[in-house]
Picture 1 (cartoon, rainbow, N blue to C red):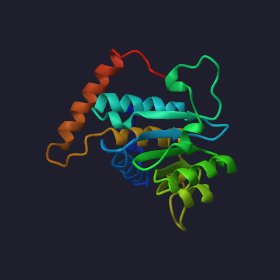
Picture 2 (picture 1 turned 90 degrees about the vertical axis):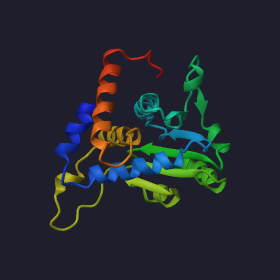
Picture 3 (picture 1 turned 135 degrees about the horizontal axis):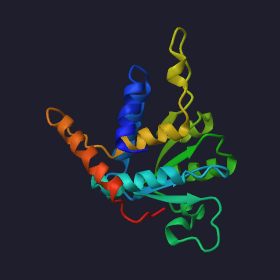
Picture 4 (picture 1 turned 30 degrees about the horizontal axis):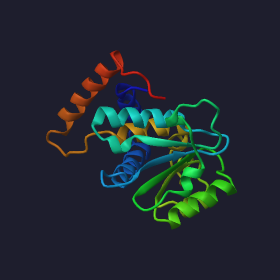
Length: 209
């Protein structure tokens, strides 16, 4: 999903909680992986691998000049012959500690084994973020979390809750790479970024993922 489509999606979602919620969560992510940090680890469940988000964050890191957004994808199963950047197993979480950020992304329950590893990473000083379907145990471990199935208050707009995890990931990754400087130059900077992204889409670098 390119920047223009993200902008159109935000227009459609205007009036719902999603635009503000995804920007808030992206701000937390961006702050956690500040240049002095130890890196960003991205992990899913045994049945869900967030490689798509990994690719988008990697693109945002390149286009926005924020290399700290480029994640290390941690995999439950590493196939033989995988390139080095796609051959990082769950053992990496055991080494996660202070200064590092662990982002857990899954639409389903993460499972007891992953929760235990996440707990250990937090205890060792890592910042834990969760982008998921609202698992209570995972949210209890996370410093910040965004669920894709928020409760709809009485009289609320149910459409505001009807957003899948893939779409939310697009909104979060785009917001994480945006220039956050305030107005009056903010709109111009956003237009400039759209132009840069359009150029990148017509002549992209060799894919990393």
